[in-house]
Length: 275
Image (cartoon, rainbow, N blue to C red; front, side, top):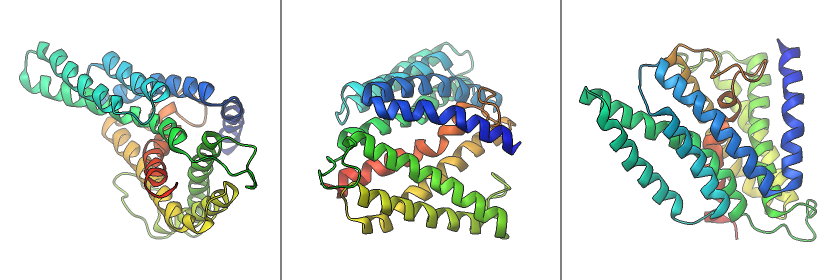
């Protein structure tokens, strides 16, 4: 099982590295594809959990949120897009004979599209990121590349730290009704790992490394919450994985769940505290 997961990770990493190297157009293209596949998966899970939806419309709306972030990041058009989607999903639900089914369809459609559409905050982060100073260790990277790399390494370090510490000394479980394997010790290990990595990345991007004491725990907790949120959805659907697209890893949603919550947190940190 571990060998399969390792081989699958080796397949996933090169496209990500290539997209980061090419820049925003490639990153945006990857995220649109992610929104497409993730949308199909989340609406399949919702359907299995007993929540009907307008799945094709919801998936299209999730993709539109990513496209909007690529074309006009930081604008208010994203909120307008959500509002229009909210209205159209409501109108589309009028056809359900049982009004209760109509309400559930409406709510599930908006929820699924906005949930997957959170991946667009990776692009909002790229747009808000400050330039990397010429004397910074990672000055060869653009602002977008540097801060997206910080997000990626922060999430990965939390996952790795939580897994290793939880596996070795995890004794005290929490939220077992959602994810039986999670332990408090694992969460602490993940938070320490992501705080160290985030501080190092901030310093390498020309920022105050002490900011990692704030951003690291926030990023780690958001990543954990994103993982638990998807686990709750899968539990409701009676599914082990969100899909079978990636051997050893499940579906696309299984790979991006942490980023859906961590992306907005890092983007907010940059917008509020970094100049």
